[in-house]
Amino acid sequence: MVYENPDGVRIGLEVHVQLNKLNTKLFCGCSTDYHDSEPNTHVCPVCLGLPGALPVINEKAVEYAMKIGLALGCDIVEQTQFHRKNYYYPDLPKGFQTTQYDFPIAGEGKVVIEGEDGERDIGITRAHMEEDPGRLQHMGSIDKSKGTLINYNRSGMTLIEIVSEPDMRSPKEARRYLDKLRSILDYLDVFNGDLEGAMRVDANVSVFMGERVEVKNISSFKGAERALLYEIMRQKNQIRRGGEITLETRHFDEARGVTLSMRTKETENDYRYFPEPDLMPMRVADRVPAVAATLPELPDAKRNRFLEEYDMTDMHAKALTSDQDIADFYEAVAQNENIDSKDAAVWVADIFKGEWNYRDLAIHGRTNDPVTPPYSWVKLSGANRKDPTITSSIGSDDLIYIIGSVNNGEISDNSGIEVIRIILDEGGSANEVIDAKGLRKVEDDIVATAVSETIAENEAAVQDYLGGAEKSLNFLVGQVMKKTKGRADARQARELLVAALKS
Ligand SMILES: [Zn+2]
Image (cartoon, rainbow, N blue to C red):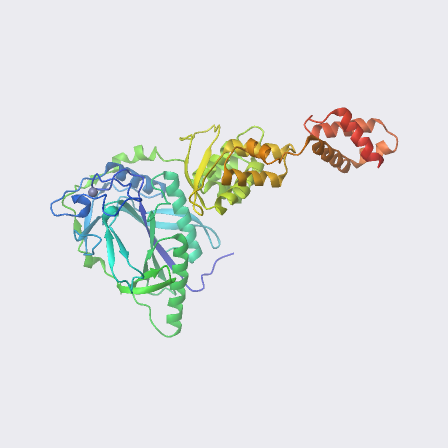
């Protein structure tokens, strides 16, 4: 099936990723750990842009930027350079933003997404480094705001701006691109996507090959999808009424779900870019091999390996590799000798992940970091965003115990799911929860179940026995013993079988 794209929609995204896992800002030593702090407490003359202050490049930020570029399959430039992008806005008091212009650190690359009609490549135009401006806080909606407050804690944070080609043909494809990008960045461990402002999206969108409109101020992926749906509809309606689409910048009002005209778009000339005289050009090509060696196995590669090494569907492979922590958790479970890898995929991808997502849990670290194969166990813990007073955690050993207990008939499938829920909401280990809640089937039940299953599954032997072949009973007893993994008493099994067959 080929997706026809009847409205000629073209979407390109500019994603600003804040490298909040760096300890210090891009050009000064201020701490990046400001998210829970009072406004304007993580600042210095450099990130406030005071006259005469001199920037010093954060080496680690350069390394992270190269990692991102390499993970997106981009060419890393020989020598990169910073420029001044001149504009005045109160969030940037020095009057220019230090950014990259004609020598961005990373050039063309691509991201593979699940498109409307199968896998497709979304081109990456470039990825460059720049400083984050401060944060304006409008008091109310932007067009009716009574006043604006400024917080410079964010000013000078390292941003990577990842610019895509206008290759996406629907809001859904845009959402998939964003999800994939976030997954790759999570793997690289360069940012914490749960922190406010960690990923911000500007979109360029056009219909019927017309003029493109830029939509700014999109702060969530869900918001991106909504903003694009609205903007595509607005452009189509305008054209239908005989109007024209003009090159402009619009603001997405998240609360109202609409885009509002901000200003006619500046052109590059308006910014009067010129090389930043306080920062020397930087030769980065020599560092590529060393940085490349630090790249982890990325989502696409991991997915392919899972399909090769374990018995699972493509859908499960995708679900299990979109997040590195979940992938590690799965491998810790699947590598247990008593667990079937397909079983583990169903339990982790369908059941466990469902319960995890239902609680909107955010993974914040594994306790036995760094995890390397072979996995003994992995513990996931997460903040419950629906109820911040709860921190949930569960170990791969718990899930192994649960799956094992279901497989040998000690607990039912439903009890297994219930145990996961209780561990996430109330804590405790699988063993404790099963005992405390009395979920274990009593021994007699297990044997009784095995007896009725054996009779149902072995009609020929049953008929033989009823026809007088006593020896068939031994075979049936053997089947019961096998089903209960030897936990039934042979004499008891024989008595139960005889009683059941006579009734
Ligand atoms: Zn500073």
